[in-house]
Every structure is written in structure tokens, then in C-alpha cells.
Length: 201
Image (cartoon, rainbow, N blue to C red; front, side, top):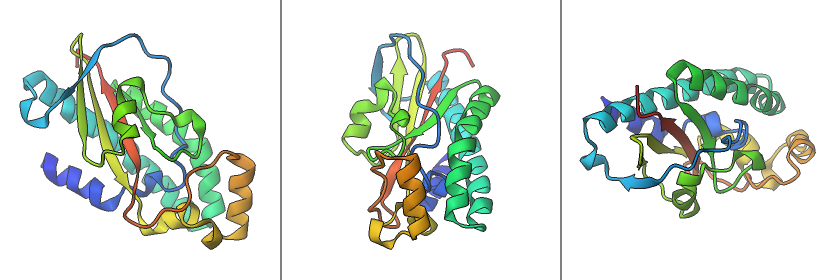
């Protein structure tokens, strides 16, 4: 079931990233945790349970964002940009509390510079790794990165600049002057969900 869920999100690209890598709040200052990379096949029982919790949080945030952005897109991409910038941070915080984790999104090509990767994820993100990745903290913490691929409807705000509607270009220029999140094609790696799970579930 886990592999099916992961495959579903990878294939769908989870269009929630669609209008901004940058719609959710950036990671807060983190305590000094020593993280090491973990192989999925080597996860112990506790880490496997934490992995399940991470997937639940990812799915919860992804589905909530996708629902709101899909509804907004029916009114036009400009509406979706507004919804994304206002609702995504609140949804990330809501799902973090609901699942007792920290969850968000990041990318190599940020729309909002506040969406930088957590410290433990920076090397993986910087290398553009397209596979899920797992990390263990010295105190039993667990962290995960899940790839997000671009859905066709995401091109309304993430496609080639010349292909964007004039009103979309205007809103992006006004709200995201440092935007690096255009020029994508459907199916491209857009970014990642990141999730941190505490040692005690």
C-alpha cells in the first residue's frame, strides 16, 4: 500500500506545488540535530512507523492543497496564486499540528525564497535527487523527502514565461520578484515535500 501511495503521488506530481514552491512557510530555526542518510531497506521498526507518519502528513498536506488549488484554478490561475500564497502556509501549519510533525515543501527553483530546504535536506535537494530520501537524527528523529512532479495544469504558472497569460506574469512579478519557478514542462521534478517526525510518536 505504501508503494502504491508513493507511486500515486510521484505520477500525479501532486499539482499542489503547482503555483508555488513557495507557498508554504519556510522551515523554522532548527535545533542542532545530527542527521544521517538512511536506506529504505534498512529502516528499523521505529523508523518504519515514522516513515508511515511522514507519508500520512505528506498526503494530508498534498490533498488539502490540491483541493483548494483545483477549485481556485476553475476561476483562473491568478486566483490560484492568491489562494496559494495565503492558504498554503496555514495548511502546512495545520497539518503539522494534526500529525504532530513538521511538514512543508521546497525546491531548487523557488518562487518564494522563504521556502528554503531544512538543513538536513539541503545536500539532497541541491543535487536534484528525484527519489524519496530518508534521514535519521541522533536522538531518534526521522525525516523524509518526497519528490513532486509537475502536472500539466501547473504550466499555467510554471511553464515558459512567454506562454504565461499576461495577468499571471503581472501577479508573479508583483508578488514574487525573485521568482525562479518558471520554464518547466509537465512531468519535470518541481520540488519535494519534506517531513520531520519526532522520536516519540
